[in-house]
Image (spheres, rainbow, N blue to C red):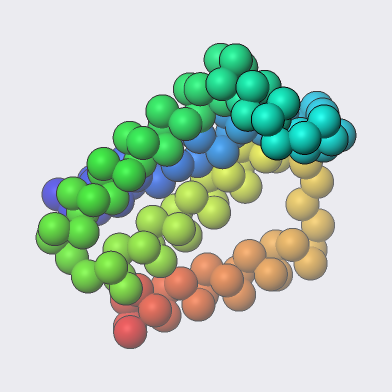
Length: 120
């Protein structure tokens, strides 16, 4: 059950980040016209509102998982899943390039997450 909760948190977190990219990824800088204007842009953009909702659902899943396992295990595991999901979405839907250096860097990060969450 804990793995299901962590996976649910990761899926909704990655979805939220994807929706933020859909909402504002085409803009140069959200804060160009000030913080108040940025907040208005966020609360009137359906992708941004859906993204905030997904962050909330991710929070619920992670909160439930934390009743069953240690934070020092749960968070790195969930973060690693988010990392992989966002990478896949970035390549498949946003045509972002992944070169050998990025792959090597991701492998090092994921190895570190694995060491912390499984062996730590």
